[in-house]
Amino acid sequence: MDDRPFPVREIAAHGPLFEGAMDVYGEAFARPPYSDLDRGREIRQRLQDTHQFRRGFRLLIAEECPERVAGMAYGYRGGPGQWWHDTVARRLAPEAAGKWLGDHYELAEIAVHPDFQGRGVGSALITELLRGRPERTCVLSTRTDSRAHELYARLGFELVIEMAFTTGGWPFFVMGKRLGADR
Image (cartoon, rainbow, N blue to C red; front, side):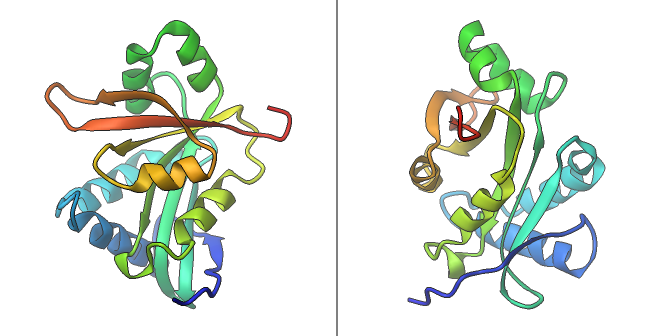
C-alpha cells in the first residue's frame, strides 16, 4: 500500500480541477452501496447554484499528483432556511438542536475515488476543511449502509440521530463533532 501523503488544497467551483472533483464524486457514488449514477450531476448543480455562495464555503481537493484529483470535500456554515438544517432540526429535540445546530459548519459532501479509499485521503480532507473553523460544531449525514460513519467516528464525530430525510427514504446517520480546543 502506498502511504504517500496527498496534498490538499482549496479550489474554485469551476475549471479543470473542479471537473476532476466532480468526476471523482461521480465515480465514488456510482459504486455500491450507493449505485447512484445521477448524483454527481445533482451535486454539481447544487454546488454551483447555491452552496458556493453560502458563508464559510470551502471546496477542497486531495491530489494524487499535480492535476489528478483523488478526493474532494466541501462545506459551509449551516443555518435556518437551509433544507438540510431545517430537516434535521425538525427531528431533533430542542436541546439537541441547540447543541448541534446552533452554531455549526456543515460538511456537505466528501468523496474519495475508489482507487484511493483507505489511504488517508478522506481524513486529510476533513481535517483541512475543519482547520480553524470558528463554529462550535461540525455536522454531517451519511447513509447507514456505507462504512463512512467509521471514518467519521475515528475523527471524533458522534451519532446525533438516525433518520430518513424523506418519507420512506434511506436511513442516514446524522453525526456531529465539537470544534475548537476548548470545547
